[in-house]
Image (cartoon, rainbow, N blue to C red; front, side):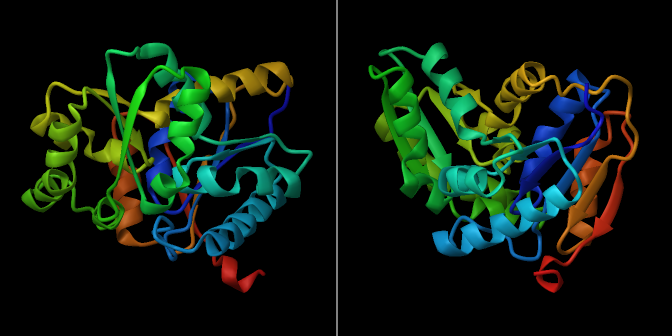
Length: 272
């Protein structure tokens, strides 16, 4: 048993979509989350910059004595997972792409037309397609970068015409031309617009990596004997820019969970 916290991080607030799944299933665990809201989005930045930012955040989580780090960001998972594992060899570090890819490979067959949407860096990495085909080489997979989604979500522009028009701009032709029936939300921000997407394309089977990563977390806790043995208090949500949008989004995501959270501002640039 291990009562230390589990660390999560993302380029901004998108990774928050992973947390309710864990808190509901594993209520004993304590969470430390870091959202790099001052430097979001990562999805259009150089890979070298993403690696620098990710190492800073992983170092910070290590200083908080976490027992496990979850990269709640597809862009970081696609570009930095191996580097972070080498940097912190004594702490298990999980990415979000492999669990979702395994789910796609099991759920789908050669009759399905699978679409992957994500940031520019995630799509250019080809990480999802390569992982999925490793598990199931018979699948048809198509990818599309949707770079404007993250900035809009970070600004809280979700349930309105601007977001719906942006979704149609990126996905109308992509879905119709490729006859997509299964859509993978290859960015942890995207579950926040899941309802928008289904309203426009109700036939889609949507796969959400934010929930699929939970099984990998449970497998790691179980295999390493890291489960907390009693309810822990003190879930903390750090942000490099503790903006009103960040706080509002936390309140939106957690309003029906019954969990309380604490917010803290932390400037990584002043510590490195």
